[in-house]
Length: 234
Image (cartoon, rainbow, N blue to C red):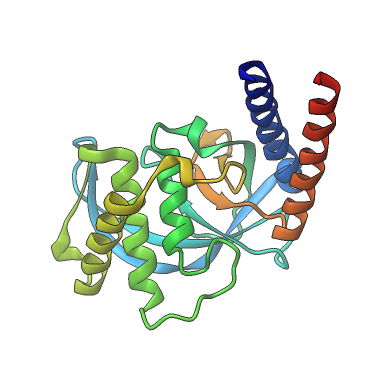
């Protein structure tokens, strides 16, 4: 019984890795990424790793690959070491994708926050909400940086709208109360690594661009494969 369980777990892990590759095949061949000029959020004074406080555009960004504006995705920054410019005429080079858990120790925590509180749910579809999207998106970005960088990240609460600060505290409280890494499904998010003119720029967290029914179809095929393997082992 223990051997069968080990075989099942091993092949489940292989399936997850394969599913991640297949799911992001839609954009894995992408060569460029554009960031739209506008964003949901606000300007905030923050400091990272002992740097001087600076004004940063904080919030949710609309992006698209290879000039295809019909397929808009939303993104949050997971990288405070490099800049990102809100200029739609800039073609960022896509250098690759990684799973959030491989990218950072608390990558799954960032996934959980985006999945729970992103105004656009990562797919460009606006939730109905009574909360101002600028406040909600700015607060979520601050919360994502908080779980990724901890004490290295500080922001000036006097530079934010009062509602943004309230929502930030709410998101962190919810995270500390309800988050569990094993509740985060693999393959739903990825970190896209970018550069501009051979210089590194911000890495962005994006939602799986494949529609959910397609993901379930891939998963279904995977289960069939595991079932067949299990019968052969018997």
